[in-house]
Figure 1: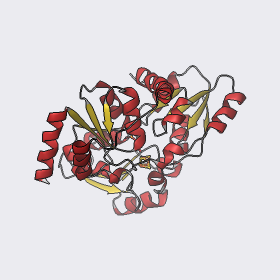
Figure 2: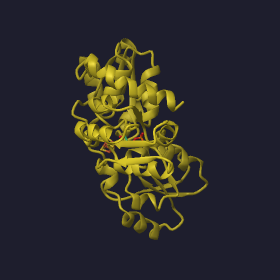
Figure 3: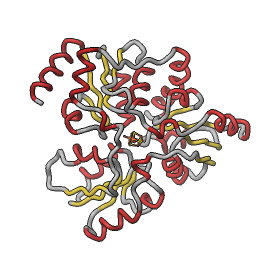
Figure 4: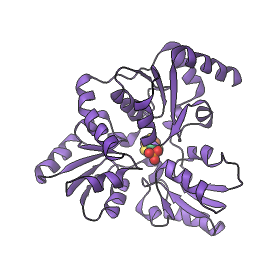
Length: 302
Ligand code: 13P
Ligand code: SF4
């Protein structure tokens, strides 16, 4: 591993590369990344970097967004097949139907979506800014795509809006149940529950804290409690345990691994750095269409 890290470091300097990694990727990748964060933080980091090459250890919508925000930079993915199934769970026909039904509709698109879906949307959001952005929109009627659970959570926080939900879901978060959380709570009654808003309503109703991956990590670090039940993908464990302060984290359910995020490895990063393979390309037309809602998000989330 040490040899591999050295080689990666050498190539990074030679080619002016920055490695961005989501909290859900393997520990070995988080260890070599320059920036690790939630989707919002990574989108900002991708826009602000002055590197020539971005290696994005995440899933395809993340690499695609980085390319859309940085058309002149080279964006490489360690594994091109790393894709988020939820990113595809909305469709143009339903969006069209909703636009016909409501004159003032805003289509709000979770960043976990394909660039094609972004092109059909008015604004993008991430889990850390969705409530703020939906609140700030002038529209009363909101069609929230693709994630139903995040959409429902937003609707509860912004009752003045009519939020129409779409049936998309993240299989990792949807695998966690209230029963899973209660079973851990029975064993560790003092543990506080921190959940990602992609979780089911029944899980969110048991949560002491609801927020993005960064939010969950901050909450655990800043809260004076020794035990936490974590309802999100287990990759966040790397950062949660980093302070090494004896806090204990119990992950809800048994399927808290995102197989797509786990396709990112240090070895694959070295391979793309050496070969330049797995470059992300976005057509000019799609780029133009998807840039608008992404930029609007970055503006409204400030
Ligand atoms: P955040 O890191 O923005 O909370 O997103 C979670 C997620 O599921 C990314 O795929
Ligand atoms: Fe998609 Fe869920 Fe994996 Fe995130 S954790 S990339 S939302 S499948």
